[in-house]
Image 1 (cartoon, one colour):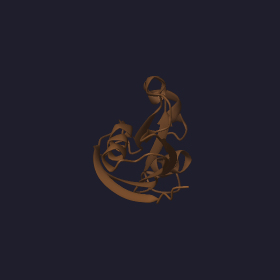
Image 2: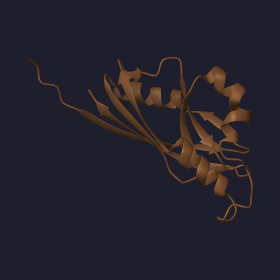
Image 3: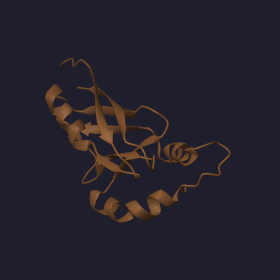
Length: 138
């Protein structure tokens, strides 16, 4: 039996976002990283820094149709929450989540035809968002 060692590789990148409530596809960036490091089979952990962004796995065709309706109606943009200002953005981030753990098979994300999206929950700000990626596998 041959012995295989586990590979751990990290990568971070910045995306420039804009409101209102933009969706930004990042799966292609992550797959390029996996190809560059020669990933085979394992797990990728993706984390967006901050408390108002979120990560989402979704069908790219469907997400365009629900973007302006169902997704944003999870937590409406109102300004009379007990937290001043952007409470809606913090709550959306909590509901959707700020990290993903996804399988990697044969060097690519094993998510079928789905895409990975960064969700900008701020309705009025342009931001630089930091995304951290860790691959653990063969």
